[in-house]
Length: 394
Ligand code: HEM
Image 1 (spheres, rainbow, N blue to C red):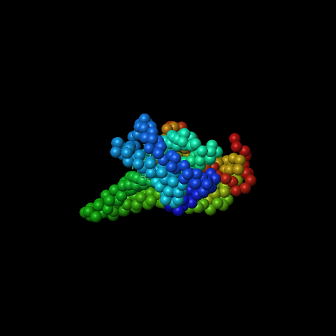
Image 2: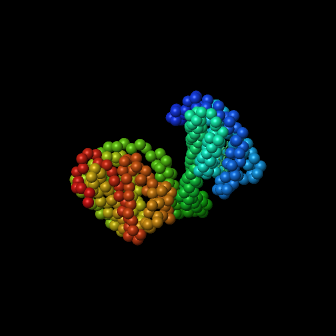
Image 3: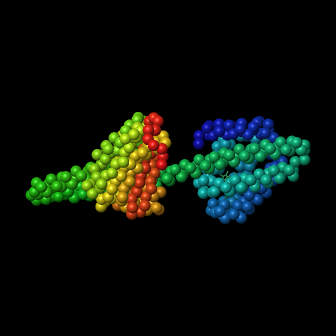
């Protein structure tokens, strides 16, 4: 974090807890009293770490490292009691949290270690303070607040660094997953294209029919590869939806027209005439319906029945797309909307995540019920443009 921004944050936290220059003065005044006792507190600090294997395991350098760490902690305590809480002081506090993430120390050990150190410091103060009791109490409060501020910065740094590292590793894992998925999807069409090109270049006197067959095969697989790229870029940059009222029935009929079904699939439409207009981006909803129709088609390789039923529910319209296909096993059901998770031998596993992402942006939702071997129902819910026109929810 930028040291200036960090320092501003620290000052804001100081204000929050009511820290003033008087507190800093009290700490400075007590420094000499506490200083001779710091080595004993530090010894106790490391003796306790030694009793906890999960804390101890981050100390990989043996006795030499512990000696060095004792020096580091002494310096930390001297700075703490110095009464100088400037920009560099705060930056060094931030480094502690950052370094602890780097070495893999669980933050809870810093919390309990600080708690132990706090008890030790306050106990020493109690033992050594012989002047006015009220002054002693004020010093105690200042020390407490100072330790809270230090811990706040260390924890903040820990959290920020921990999250940043997690995001980096998740991003890398996601890139790997996407790269693997794309490679898998493109290899097959490219291999077909390669084989056909080889034939066209090397066949002696190919018949015009054979040549046409190979050219058509190339075209089909180039279109398939293009589809993979389009699906990916659709996913990467979903445009902001233009929310307008539109006819759900018209959208369903267009999606059916664009996504041809084989004659082995019977289509049943259940669309009440008084269905209210939905409020969403009609073009994007057509993509959602298209994905659900294609999904249903792929779930019924041997044919079956596709039912698309719409109804008005409260302030929304629901469209249920039901197939009589293979269904989805219960243990896969919660994963099918994850990007690149596919239960099919072919297919990028992007259809349902795209549908869900579109619906999220269009203030809609998607839910699924499925029974293995019996089929699935995907239900899209969209807001209506005006007052609901249909019957109540059943
Ligand atoms: C009050 C709680 C603690 C404070 C104030 C503290 C302070 C520090 C400081 C100032 C550093 C050096 C950071 C830098 O590189 O600039 C550090 C590093 C480290 N701390 Fe802590 N620490 C605390 C708790 C712990 C605990 C409970 C452990 C448990 C084993 C631990 C283990 C380490 C280790 C292994 C390093 C790296 C040391 C190296 O570079 O060799 N710390 N800590």
